[in-house]
Length: 386
Image (cartoon, rainbow, N blue to C red; front, side, top):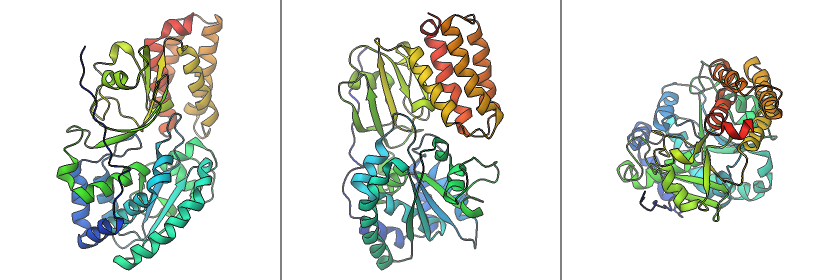
């Protein structure tokens, strides 16, 4: 099948004048800023895809209360490394996005929750932040940003577990509701946005919602930064329009023998070759936080699955039984089938367990384990059995 060449974009890493964007934000009312985000159709770039403008609107409606803007820079999803590059090259855009969000919802304090392994970035980030603080205070309003370091816990990428960590507690998810926009960090209304989402808000304010919507599709506006790895001759970070088919992606980044692509990291879906043409990369198809890992015919999909399950069993916080026990049983189950100790039909029982975990687990970790598990079992069962 002939496919069109995918559209590469250069907006995230494009140099801009933050003073101009912040001045524009100060000239707009908070309502106008939120409406611009709503009009743009921007959805969270961390993978969940909640409308950014709606999140800001809900937080703004909490009147006469202390509020926070939290930037999720934990980036613990396997195969994702684009936020590190954004922070290294255009951190000022992240700061600008946080200040815009603060202006929109009425928050004067921002916190960047930085992945512990990115501690080496801190000296440079703090130096740039000092200059930013001076600039934002000169323009129109007080907004202060600080850093908190994670300690390598995958679960702290979940927003409420992140709040617990920032507050100095064990990183475990909270019950919802209440949602962060009503009761988040320290029990105050909080907006949590991914690094890339905040930079996109800057792009929207600079160019306008109408121009932003020219990129992507009706349901997936804009572009996305992808972390491309695995069996590819050109690994790296690429900003591409949303809405392309996976076949178009593979034609650009594959090695000619791609049999599967793991879209969205360990918590995402493993798409086989037969579904490349019909799979859209976007919120109307398969959403992704950015990780795109390609596998060719030399790879054992059993080993891929085992690696993911081992990861989840290690990273489960253990708070809820479905996830704590379920991750362990899925791992033991596929090992048992591979060794021939259990019949191949046992995989059907494990699929049911994964479905139960999706319904009964407290947070996104346990709820997403079945994504990779079911897609690999369904499409590569023979590699697990034999």
